[in-house]
Amino acid sequence: MFRSKRSALVKRLWKNRLHNETQCENETSLSTSPDLDTEIKCVAQSMLKRLKEKQLEMLCQSIETKGGEITGCVLLPNSDLRLGKRSVAPHILCCQLWRWSDITPNTELKRLPHCESADDPAYLCCNPYHWSIQQKTDTPYTNGNWSKISRLKITDIDQIEETVMDVSTETGNTPTPRRLDFSGDTTNSSSRGPHWCTVAYWELRQRVGRLFTVFDSSINIFQSLPHGGGLSLEVLQHGTQLDPIIRTREKIGFGLVLSREDSGVWIYNRSLFPVFVNSSWFDTPNSRTPIVIKLLPGRSSKIFDYDCVEFLKSMKDARFVDGPYDPRSIRISFAKGWGPTYHRQFVTSCPCWLEVLLNIDR
Image (cartoon, rainbow, N blue to C red; front, side, top):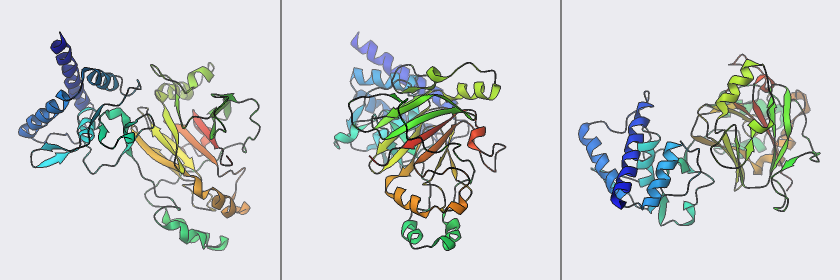
């Protein structure tokens, strides 16, 4: 009975591996030859034999729900597996088999907030939905640009426009100033100390529902999830006859995760569609064109650095501000981008979007 259940779990994993490959028409397959494919299966089978039945169940549940179910860590010793003449880390192999067939050992992966494997360096989590592909974004404050910018005067600020590369420039401003009155907020804690951000949900130019105050270090924001807590947008929404809003709501799905980590704020895209993000940390100081990044499914990116907030406030010149400006505000649109490369010029033209107000003075 024990062997039959374990065998059934392993078969389910291999079935999902084959299904995953059919979803990757434009990706490079993990195996490049029948011999290598056989070797990969042998290594993977050997790896799976080291997992307990409960771990196999968690792995199956995570893969079959595509991360919709928050499951525990699947731990293996932190040592590489031999794959012919090369070696591969066990978490890389699991991600290749059951999530991204085209990643390589050089792909930079990032643990998600609910992964606890960092607590014990002797072990490594092999749950592919405990990882994300880190998407790096060049900003005026990265790659050594901070010291250069801090020495510039307002009249010299145009010189740093070229420091932001490989990022699409798109416009869009939050339509309202920062709201300091949180008396009507929906809170998810009453005893965990100060909040680190407040989230507002918008549909076009209309704010929907109350502000949601965040105390935990990370927050799930979603349309629908099998299980799990966080901010359910479905609860806030009302009936609508507008097709763009209806279609975009259907694309939110598992949504995204916002997390406060070390000195900055990170976002992870859990949905099946891109999300678009604008943050003052991306923008070139005193430029009229805010920069928006496109974050693909399964990717994570740093979207704010706490260390730069005072600098951002001091650098902004009123001559370059069109409407209210708050360097602590982040805008996130589900599925729809905005700016000069889209027919939507402003974030208020996006069907479903979030305004994240950071509580820097904590």
